[in-house]
Image 1 (cartoon, helix red, strand yellow):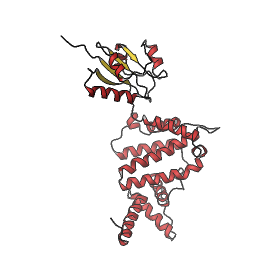
Image 2 (image 1 turned 45 degrees about the horizontal axis):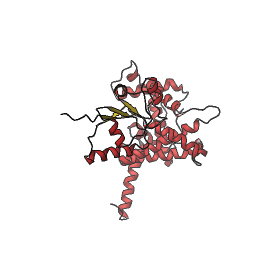
Image 3 (image 1 turned 90 degrees about the vertical axis):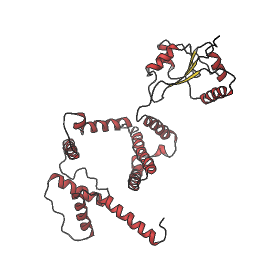
Image 4 (image 1 turned 120 degrees about the horizontal axis):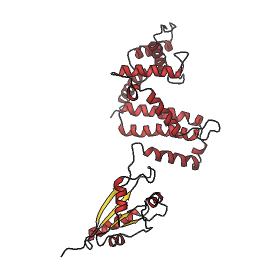
Length: 321
């Protein structure tokens, strides 16, 4: 004599970052094939789409014992978890299975939709939106007031890169990303020229595609130098600059500024001599131009030398190690 089949429990999960109704084919097969479909949440975002597809859903929050009983006779019960109280149900099922008192149904966790790469950025945008509305400090910030933080976070990111600290690198990248999302959220409120983080991302996508014709178009680039040449030509067409100095921010660190100007002159093939005047500033200018010509970032080189000097100072103080 064969024992009665204990049936099957299917826990169907779906990412809240994916539009409701966009379920995988196995998920729709399971929904249509289940003997009962249960959902404890009457406001579950999937319900309108399930009804439209002809799936009958019962609004129940079963206990572990009730769910097991519902599977008696070989029935399949599919549950749409709501996120609230689901831990109690799964813990209850685990206790029942461990007790040995009941014949447990097969338990299947079926993902109905998956997060695509970058999906957590949607969470970030939502969190930033709420903080902007509800936080007394955040709600009062402006582009101008936040500008200094963008500079600070960029420097901290550079330091993490140069120190080789992977954990710090991950955190500092997040801090820089926060600045982007924060400024984009503030920009939404501009009365005359509002734009959103989607507009920022959209502009960047268009720029990247346009500046990589060897990837998205018919152009070819076999070497990094070919890519750089493509990039410079495309930027020149886009910007339509009157001078090679246009677009060089004068507020950047002095060595970086000097190297950038020297690089623009070199790339444009201009014959512009360095100033012959004396003084430490002109000596640094000449060193920065020399570094650029050699393919060396003078800022990074100076920071590396400064770190070595710092370590020597700490060693002299007996603080090394």
